[in-house]
Length: 49
Image (tube, rainbow, N blue to C red; front, top):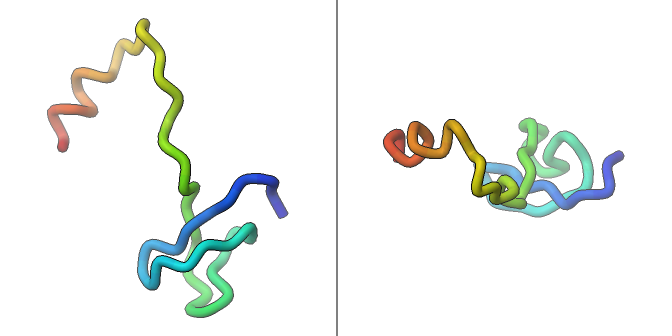
């Protein structure tokens, strides 16, 4: 178990485990990536959106 809160992308439930307790799908972190002014790939990430 990790210390950061995680979210299921399918049913949008929040949990601390690596899999969703409702649908058993893998969860992803609920926090955005850290900001860095020296981000070399930020331009490409914004183009994908």
